[in-house]
Length: 137
Image (cartoon, rainbow, N blue to C red):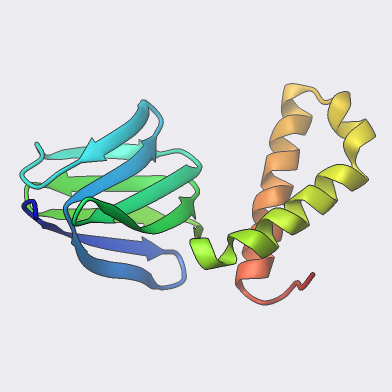
């Protein structure tokens, strides 16, 4: 058992996770950041990706996070994200995203950067609707 630290994960809607960890992997704009107890203090920008929480050297929780911030202190990590999707919500979110991409494949193949961004925003809104129970499969 390694040294542990406290993690708080908060979305714009609620407190998502509060607990202990001995390792945390966070997607940041500079790349994946591995965090252990007594990590040097820092503040980073999140990028959309997979966040993984380990306890006793085993992955215990995984979540998809969108944009936001991570604050690291020696014994506490705080993650503020606009949208957090827990691993148990992945399947329905992935199915809805795949359906949308399949329905709009011709448009996606011809995307400009602006249209690509619009598609990403739409996918995040779909995932958010699923999370809030506004959309079902």
